[in-house]
Amino acid sequence: MMPQLSRGKATLFAILAFAMTLVCSYFLPQYLIILNGLLVVIFLSIFVHTTWSTIIAALISLISVALHILFRRIVTISHEEWNKYAILVFLIIISTLVVLYVKKLILKMQFDKSHMTSLFENATEGLVVTNSDGDIVLVNPSACRMFGYEPDGIMGQKIELLIPSQYRKAHIKLREGFYEKPQNRVMGHGRDLHGQRSDGQTFPVEVSLSTYTQNDQRFVIAFIVDITHRKEIERSMVQQQKQLEKVTDEMRKLNADLEAKVEERTVILKEALQRLEQSQEELSEALDKERQLNEIKSRFVSMASHEFRTPLSTVLSSASLLSKYTTTDEQDKRNRHIEKIKGSVKHLNDLLEDFLSLGKLDEGKIGAIFGELNLKDVVHDTIEELKGLIKPGQNVQYEHHGQEIIESDKKLIKNILINLISNAIKFSENNKNVYVASQVNQNQAVISVKDEGIGISDEDQEHLFSSFFRGKNAINIQGTGLGLHIVKRYLDLLGGDVDLQSELGKGTIITFTIPVKYS
Image (tube, rainbow, N blue to C red):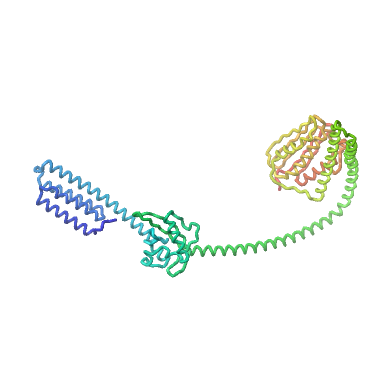
């Protein structure tokens, strides 16, 4: 802090000291120590805040020393006295520098003090400082206004004065515990805090605490913010949110009712249009269906008489023979007939699966579910699953060209591939290869299955995609005549197409195309 001496008094004392020094040095020139009074003049300039006052005092002092030397006459001054003059000049310069440095420190302290005072007095937050006994030792105007007290009415009081009465007793223990283990606490710290004004009213506050030590005594600074307005806004926002949720629920219900009505009217309109279309189509389709039904019945009877009778006869004969092999050394014979029964049952199961698939297609229970898939992986995985059907010496070779990702129905593509690849294996002899190739162009994917089997005649190729139709040269090979028909139906669902090229005794190539993207 600035020493407690006014600028005027300091200037007066400096002038008197300067005058006394000059007078004494005039009458007693042989006593050079008298000139040390000039140092007093320089140090008195500390009490004058301007830097120039010290510099002027130093210059006057140096001039005074020079005049004193001239007055003494240079030739009469001894070597020892010259040393004293030099030391005096050195002291004047050092004293001047020290005083200037001290002034700089004092000005900085005054600047910091004025800023701290302004910060304390003008802070919008309430600031309350308490000692280790919980007594309020310092409070700023914002805190006084917040709690409705005059500074004199709050200074020296316990901090519990500012806390609602019902919490004061418990707060004493909390305060004592805080002083035992002091630590800074951020604003709020997850608590709902309240303060109490001089009129007894309580209001919500946020409080953060900081501690410091001065003269071996601990003090606590409480930063207090009145959050009444914020709490009112929060309550208002909660109420508005509840009202908004209520309005949203009502709007959702209205939209749901409206959608239900629109959907109901749309369904009625669709049904009406469908009835009109059906009434027109039924007349033209009735004769075609009757004719097709008769053809299908004849094919089914022909197929069933052969495909069901053969495995059933095998099961019956094998079961009869099993009863005759009763000894242990005839286990191989029993196993052989058991395998025949299993094969026949599997064949019957495959027949039923074809019938069920056809039935689901006719009933519209099978639809396409489109999504991204890796065509190369689908084809490769399907070939791996069918390796158990490969005959001795057979090999399924696969190659892919172009990109791999398309958008289609993975399950339907897999069913198509199973049907075509299993047919290629079934209608090919031992040691004959099956070739599978796939290619993805910009707009479509092309998959082909080629075998070196028995081939199909030109006459039979026209009817291969009809239900229950089988080529003349495949009568003795197991099958329902539904495989290619189901493949065609699956491709219709995918928006694709199929092409067949075959020659008797040289094999068959079946190629189908599907769009790369569903639209």
